[in-house]
Image (cartoon, rainbow, N blue to C red; front, side, top):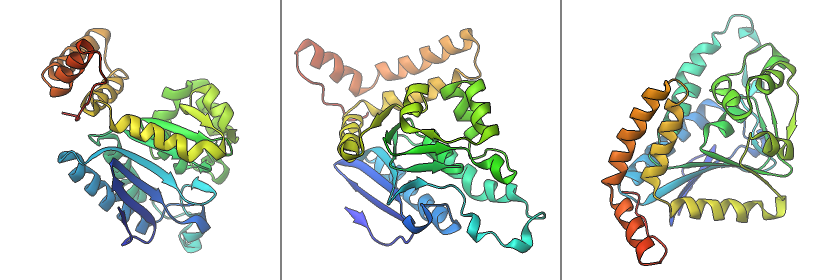
Length: 268
């Protein structure tokens, strides 16, 4: 079911899959204050639906030719150039949204259908998995206008492709095509455009049928590994595994294995 109340995004949920689609195609889905307000509302709805089990995965995508072109530079007041505090905008809109996306109790799949530029590339990196259409591309365009990467790009990008390539992309602002993005590990898979929608749906259904609580705990552990020592990480794994072992999904997984049938998980 799709909600038509929004003007900058499209949101709907069915069969355990929530879809948040950026919908400013004439602006290549560039971010706006209205879009962030609507996305926050959509995330509220994902969280509520995840709590009652009706949503098991979130797919983030874009309409038209672009995934997201980043900030809408055309909306900037020329009179504010040189004096505006862009940090306020990050603190108000970008940073809270990225943090909420990363904290969702369901897996997040980013479906990169076209150009992902600036903070749009950051958004693609913030998901748990990213699938890219072959015509898609990524560009950290910040340096082209005298800015630094934001919305988590300096955190996520080195994790995905290493510091050398991350710095090169950030400093040179070069465009990376989808095939290169797959080869470097920027995205999970590059898919022919004709097969893209079906492939995204297949991954969404696969994630929705998975033991989602365990997947979210896995995300948490990988994040902790960035700051933990080995001893601390082993302890964190013990805590999460103890919790996983008490869940119904573990009982179902073992029972299904013994009965030689597919497991039916409910994310609990």
